[in-house]
Length: 183
Ligand code: PNS
Image 1: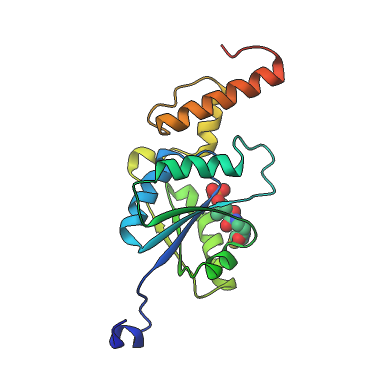
Image 2 (image 1 turned 45 degrees about the vertical axis):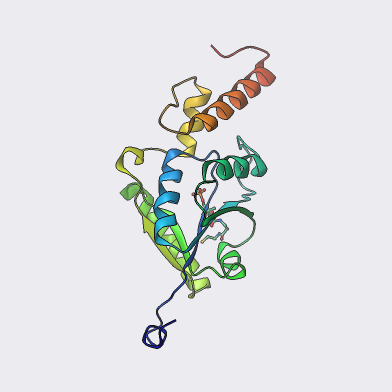
C-alpha cells in the first residue's frame, strides 16, 4: 500500500461479502454480483443458514450449486455458506465490506437498520449499497417462488437452469402434498 494512502486509512484489496438467502438466485442477484465483481478485488457470495425460514424451496447445498454454476466465469467471485453473525463471518474472511442491493425505497428501512447494527457490532466493516438494473427492481426470490407455485412464467426472472430446477421442485412438492399434477 502507498504510504499516503495508508496514513489516510484508505483500504486496498477490498474483500466484500454479498450475503443473502438466495432461495433461489435471481437475475437481480446475478446483476449485482457482476457489478460487485467489477468493483471489489474479491467478492464472496455468502448464503445465510437462516433458522427462521422454515419454508425454503432449496437446501443450502442446492442454492450453492446454482450460484456456483451461474458465476463460474467470474474469477474473483466465490460462493460459500455461513451461519451465525454476518460481521463475525466478515472478520474471519478478512472482508472489509458487505454488499447489499437496494431495489426501491421500501428496501431502505430494513437495510439501514441492518447496516447500522452491523457497523455498531463491527466498525471495521462498511456496508456498500448498489442498485440492480432497473428491470430487476421488482424482482425477489419470494416473488419467484410464488409465481412458480401458481404456474406463472419465470422467463427473464431467473436463469434458464434455475427456472428448470424451480419448476421441478414446485411440481414435485405439489404432487407430494396433493397427489395431483399442477395445471
Ligand atoms: O436475502 P435476505 O433474506 O434479505 O438476507 C438477509 C441476511 C441473510 C443478509 C441477514 O438476515 C443476515 O445478515 N443474517 C445473518 C445473521 C446476522 O448477522 N444478523 C444480524 C443482522 S443486523
